[in-house]
Image 1 (cartoon, rainbow, N blue to C red):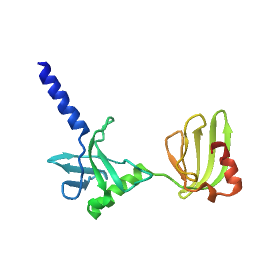
Image 2: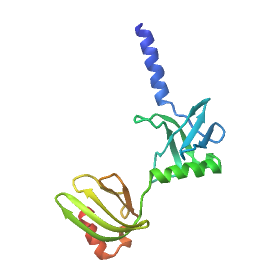
Image 3: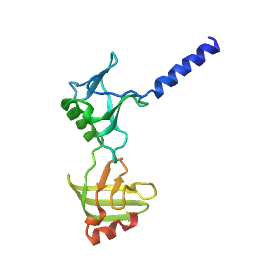
Image 4: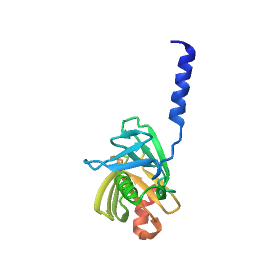
Length: 180
């Protein structure tokens, strides 16, 4: 195998990996699979199952939706620039997948937080009901998205959101002071 062929092959692979393809209602067909997943047909190729990922989940949740293969080292197939660019049925199907992937209960009340041995044990009331979870105090489990908005990730990588810390009672805010 000549060096010229290797270089051409590598250049083609790099071009393929870095190409940005926009998906829309005119060039992509999304379908629900019998198992409840989503398949995609695009440029004559069919993927039996795809991942649906937000590129900017907090700032642009309905724009720049990445459609990827499902392997461990997934590859991007294309991007939906705006959910307005797909049909209503496709949008509903993709939003369902996004809601599963980005399931984030909203913390409405902080009942208790205990700090022991580098872990914090939360007991909260969410919009989905009462919940207990644990975070590692040494990591970045609590991320301040804005001055008042927090995203908390537990040991199992479940996400919880506090949309506005200042809407919690003074007592609840004091319990959170350790993380702010």
